[in-house]
Length: 218
Image (cartoon, rainbow, N blue to C red):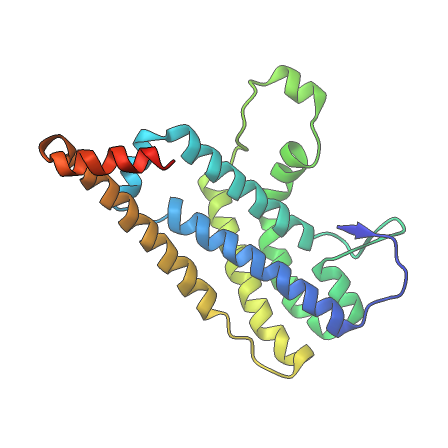
């Protein structure tokens, strides 16, 4: 996320963009957490059994996006002559944010996520790629998932704590959690309804006709 500096943004401008980044991280985490790391209903379990590759690829895409978004925020304030949109950049603009950034960095530094990012996502290491079995997913262990959870929660707390310092107002983010949670529940109900439909299909000619009509409009 490095750019060539033109005019330096104000602290308020910088914070406005970082808040959006944190919101993006929150939404991706809540989606991945709701779909893959919480007990699932019968509808979602059935889809996982019927379309395992699709479900696996979706999880991989979510986790890679989450890790890259988080790691960019943990970059240094600058890389050479290029400025980075990162928490360090925010500390450079306003030193009062330093304790909040230090708390997040302790989680990041105590995890192995930077190694995973550098080894598997930042670039394609030729020697590793030639020697290892090729796979589409990045190797995340249970400890890595827990670290991602802690970072998501920590960034959410940082946004809540920092906002009054920089924007003179509280930041309310609960509606985003509720929206993702509701949509995960809607997905489960939709999948369960579809499962029940196909279970009843052989015994109900009307349902068979409905399926034929539906397929005709695809």
